[in-house]
Length: 552
Image (cartoon, rainbow, N blue to C red; front, side, top):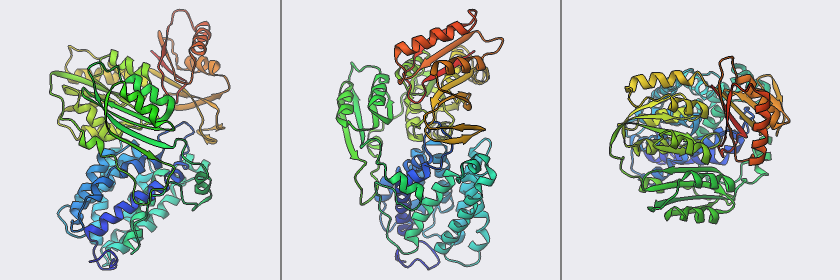
């Protein structure tokens, strides 16, 4: 079977390989259009970008797959790489859907319509099981209903390619109904971003399965809709994607300082540290400055700088440097260790002081991959490892990383920095693993977490009419009010978090708050809160959030 002879009954490994590459390029080309569907006004790890980065991780593997490979071999390569590269909840769910293909097609030379249908069902089941409380009106619904409405067709004797065509049609029907299942989507007048991203990938795949060429990766979005056209008028905020490995020298400083610096010259900064190397990634207009800063920590390897504003006529570049430089797991020298996810030099240092063995630079807008988390877990020299995601969009990737290691890993459900700090403060070094897990989990529920940030888009969300640039106050992740004054927002939110038993408040100020402004805000808060309550001020240095508030 040739790649254009697609109306025969089955799909070959070569055709499926090329279809995966085309799907990856299609979501890359349309990632901003998918990002625009996000209704949450807070700066976020956007869905289209996370899905694109997840499937991008498979490209290096796929490009090395020979033409004679079977569908089982192709899907195994793709699924494994996607699982390790998964970012954010949407990326993890996407990787599980593709993992279903791998399981269902294992050992098969070609794929029929029935093979594909059965494999997609495996993926849907795995995706639903991965979510503690599945929400309908999301990518979960789209993938499930598309399968349910094509199951009989798969058994009716149609070709594999025709099956994918019908599957996409049913997925689109399901996507159009997502606003009826999620009120936030209906109010915003949009469909679910994850479901749309999934369809974009499938459409890229079908372009090949229907006899066309592989879709090439482009820098700008295709002007398919008004939203896409508007986004395409704006080039990426930062021109360069810089990545490199630092071979640490014996005098290297705390890498929290490196991460903090990168956040001042760009975004999407990621610094993964272990005893010997530092993996660095950042989007910036000054890659030379990032490289110069990296040199302060040791010698550099695998330096790559990609111009994100230039069209790439072939495929998206894949990050293979980390795989080549991946170290063997650290030897186990103690019973218990900690991995925390945090952004900001002050907050990272706080977790280190509390006993974290590894701090993965990441958080809101910077979701680390499963691979990043796995590397941190395996570089923790402990038999038992507690992982503190400290963000709801990082929990699923953490749980997937836990399945890829032979360490005994417990992912605590920390959704905020205060929850992570409180969990570590309630760890008893003399206690048993299960007792500590219970104590830290219980402590998470006792701390009040507040964040003050800004709106990145106009929105009507959860009963609030929000304008771009508004100051947003969030109580444990829920938007509770908007303000014009940061100081007033700090006082109002802190008082909301307090109870009659509150005795300790910690205020962490971010990279966008000057020291003198933070000090003035602290004094204003001090004047409004009972003197019986202790208040601490910490320069967290975090991006995105002006203030993070912990109340206990």
